Image: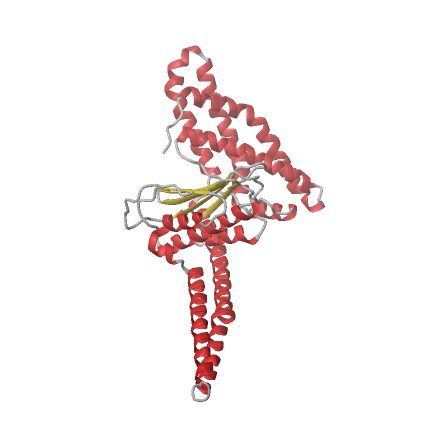
Length: 382
């Protein structure tokens, strides 16, 4: 829980809320008008302006409520970034938070206006100074509690969103697993199986030549031995694609350092992990980092990169950054979408900050516990 705001700051919030009251009324009126006229398409442009305006206003009230109460007041809206206009409107229409915000504007704002006005008046009236000092926090926290009730998802909605998220991530994970199985099957078929078939044919020919031409038979046996080595190399390559041995031997920190050493761009690795995540989480994080580093090497034109691993409050956090030209877009290319799918299976998230001219910062977070405490100090690998 964060520290709660004092009487003076809360009174400032009350004054700001009074100033924003007309904006709330205008936004709600335009939302109502736009919704009514949507059937004749005239209301669509109105909604595209009015709903984001209402969302902006409610976000400001969430921030003030969070500071007044001392804890976060999340919106948890359904994502609409990158959607076409019609899809965006459909998402807003089925998002429970949209209706909560409209209800907040209709129900809470009039009551909140009175509470905010009372807080400001207590400050302006000299004779009520003591009442203001002790009363303002209680009045504004009561108002903020009303804001939180309407502007945060209820328990049922949180469960519904959680089920929807898990359904989507499970489907993505199943698709990813099926694709991985096809890749492994293809690698085995095109590589190891072909070499083993050639090995069998070579040994068969050598067997036929042992009596008639021992020298030629020995040559074929030598070729078979080379084929065996190549087949073992193919098998090791397939196994490394499933679970790299370095990850099992050295853990996530050591495996990432090994990745950094193979990079053409100098990459520094800083880690402060006091234990190891569960093996599935460790593997998902490793391949996610590997994909980020591959993109760094191929697209960023960077002169230096870095990876920071940390764990706090039950979350593994990985930051992959570079000093390249920026402009990375997670919606372009299959690699970053694969990273998001891989992390979503563990309720993980990925955030990308990549303005033009850089730097690029990719933040991966996965909730997990750590086990097997270790005392390996942080290190840098260049």
